[in-house]
Image (cartoon, rainbow, N blue to C red; front, side, top):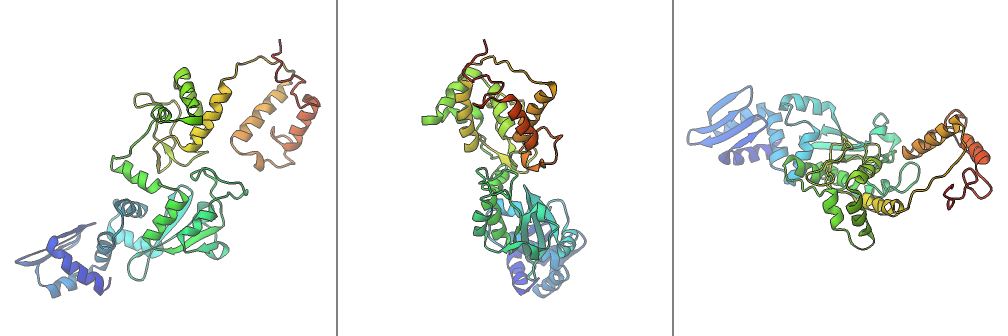
Length: 362
């Protein structure tokens, strides 16, 4: 606590203060100060300042949340990170002296007290939480995040910002609340705003059917598929794109306002209010593929080869192929084992079982 905070407390007392257990008011009889442990009334200004100095954490806490101008969503987010609504001020400040750890998607956020009683924030990938900051690429400008998170550790472009593929090896340090919120918003766009809207009961959800009705041009074809197939295919879309393993958002949109999907929406902290552009783009391609007539193909496979094909599909779908070592010959999606299957079952034109795709097998 400092003189600026004390002076602000005296000035604000006329309008009344009520913040996390600290209550201050002013009347003709003098100032009244209350905390969960103390009650003082009839104080003059000098005595008010003395009582405030005896309760520095309460005053500092009030000043940080009530006197620093920031958007409501940002304040709610910062308070949520340090569990301000569930933890009393002394307990929270004792924790802040050491630091409080919080998470947001794949972000590990560390909160500590600055010298002026405000907060200072550090943020990095949770996979780096046990590494020293000196071992990471350190940044202080939130705008640096734009390039840092554009590609995953594998070097591949990340078209979906909320995919669980956040790269490692970096940290943002010594941020104030505004800079932390800006950094988070660059890494996970609009997640704080939508999270806050949901908490306030104001999240505007646009369900699948409503979203598809707005599609035009090359994406208008999805509406035809939507009319013909009902909502079953949307379950496939959601299962493919919106599981926790693919996106950190918690899906709140359903088929329409009256029809829920069968697929679980996930457990993410921040909500997904409508089908994203990646989902719409994928659905357009799948609409085209689903327009094909099914055909019957006949192949000869051993039981182990059938299971291997299933393993390959599962490994590709879950993004696990890079984790399978070349020496793991017992893994169905092992590269050498897959090459052996191709050598055995593909003809020189690349047809499985020597059966051309155009051949119905009849």
